[in-house]
Length: 400
Image (cartoon, rainbow, N blue to C red; front, side, top):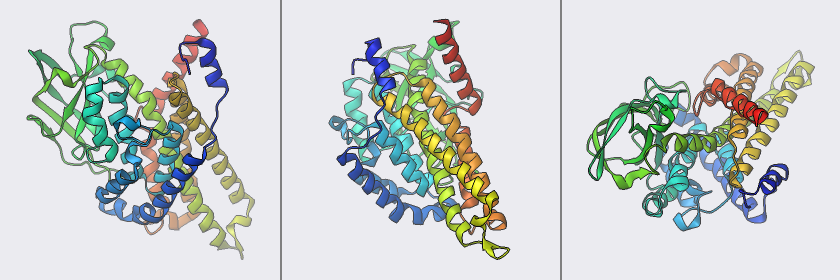
């Protein structure tokens, strides 16, 4: 599609095709079998032990899932972002921790390199990410800069053919287990426009001066390490810079536009799993001599849950389709992430209510789904930030 043609772009938005072809259906069946037979039986154990599922990640690499939407010339499967979203949903329905790994590796680790890297950079880093041999991560958030991405303080000072990076990052998903970190820095702090002082670099694990804190104890997705990352006179060559100096804010925002699709898919998967567990339980649980599914109050809750999940999935797949077509999708991905995150929290809360007292104990999965769901309202931009993105885009189009 020629995205520079306004009419072609409009057709791309109006004529959305979500139909999977035969190859895609076959791949989805492989994903579904893997998720249900190998991932789901491990979910409770991963949550309880907070242990990174290294063996499952290796298997996902062997299946090609770690690079599913990435081009074949870099070791990926060259599949659509729609299939990517469906994959993340399926994996997260089985285990939110496990599904998060390919999501971060692809949408936050590989995508910025794919979108903004040189051919040499793509050849250097993407094949190992696609195989799952070396994972990628994104390092933006700092203790004083979360929602305000342009407020980062980590600096990169040019020194000949190298940059010297100093600072720290916090809440970095896959920190310590990932091998490459797309790192946002400040290279021109004297500029008044904070959006032009950022520059991104790919920093490799093992570089002198790069270190990691201990994994944080989290409410949910416990098997995925989240750590602080420290940069103490970390030297990286100019060849590790993504784009030019000052391109960092655009790289970060475009990365997050795509990354929010993965978070939305994660939220849909968690919510779907909660509903499926709830349906199974509610058909067996009896009160007043009947299964609780015979009560309208329960039926209405189930109907609302199913409707919201379907709506969240369609918003997510629309955003995935637009991204796949190379069309701007900031508003659509924010809508998907906003609605899907809120849906996941509402559905898992209602599911736990239907489980009653059993939902509150760890023997049943309801409380795990609720804990896993909460993060989808926080990372990749809080729900409040999503509303800002959506509103500003609406107003910008109004003024145009």
